[in-house]
Image (cartoon, rainbow, N blue to C red; front, side, top):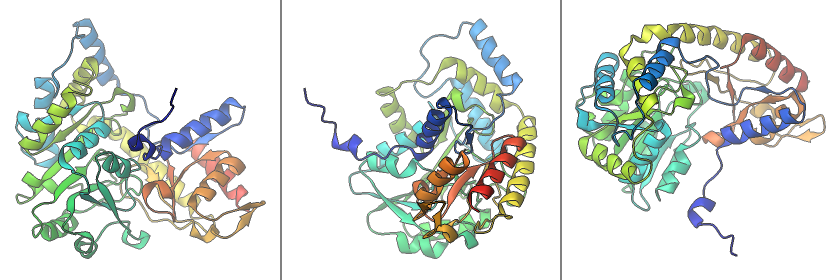
Length: 396
């Protein structure tokens, strides 16, 4: 029997974040005390008022197939949320609910891209962007950014990356992995470039929208009248509401794109989980102030981890404005040998930290920037202090 798999799946790179998490679990099973700072997952429980809504949905006998694009009242809640939080006005036909924001992104790539179409990805970018583009036969075009610029792409860089084959621009703000936030003025400057290239569709990934620390106000590309009909706004409840396992994401998009993703989803997964959808109605209808306690805690942890990392010689950090990651430059260690281990790149460094310090991080190579590693501070204060202490000791 042939074990040959498709060229498509063979071209896909395993998710580095999930791979590192699996490696950490394997080492824990061997009895090692691994501190996991690799996964992008809040360490809080889902708020009780959301859980209670799910319990009520079970009692109300929600158990049947759901509409492919989501319950009508959930779509109404999403429309209200977009208007309240982002000043965006959508109609129900422009909203599609999916099984996580990752599926939302996958759907959009599948319905927009043709073979050879190029997608501009400011680096660093979320680990799955590149492979999602490739699975749609698109071509990722990476645009390097600098720590000194807070890892944000400039209008000049955007213009230089555009070719006749460019079809889309994807970015996240707040950014995973850097925590950077594009201001409204910075987005307007990028939009001014895009005015001259009307074929380009923008995907604005705003999953970390509510996890920001008051420096730069969150803004949406679709706020601009001339970009609204060219922008797909992607969001979900996984991060800010501590609902990673509930798997609900959604888009606000031009109606023709929403119809196409609905058509695709109807042949792949159909509608998202009924109980999760009912819970998300409550999550979105309530004030974002109800989750502020988590954001306040993340802000304190950010201050703690930056202070500790800045004490380690060779780590170069900027101050992330959102999300729950730091993305330090570790190039000072490239070419060095640490306790018999040669460090050639960020992947070597991340693996050394795992093996020598029992701390799981993620190589920056997975995010399109090989100078850095991603460290999540979605962990307890005790774990953060112990992890950075171990890293510091392993680098002596």
